[in-house]
Length: 208
Image (cartoon, rainbow, N blue to C red; front, side):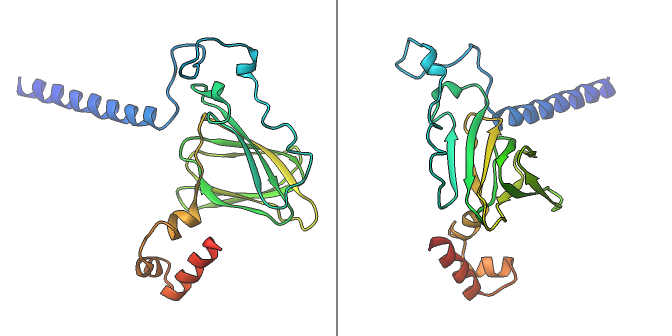
């Protein structure tokens, strides 16, 4: 009898652990919806314009001088609410870097339209994977991993389309997350095995 009770307790504990793990996975991604789509608050009617996004019109008419990211997320395109997908167009002038960042909510899929890009990602074992993309190439950035995009060409711009597995895919930039978060300079200096003056120079560079 004691052995049976022990087995029941172990079974209940296993179920509880699995339930908690499942709930964490659900919270880490967009929730499923129980209808075809979600209307904005105080809206009861819908037509085809609700499902249409025109925010990319004209963005290719003039090449930007600095990195430009034009998004179609739930904020810009409310019809994406509940659909677990969003989009962005990245325009990188020559020798422009999209600094290392993570997207904790979504996997990213990058398609290079024109130009060339060096892309890289770091996995949880600290392995770096880099690739030189040409127009027509695609690269996947797994959810939560640090990655970057760099147009190394000194003459030609690059344009890419990024699709995300979330209607609101946040980007968390690594440099400001570390150096502009209020962590004490001494702690940062010890962490990066350098001196406080170097940390101050890095912080000054981020704010200039």
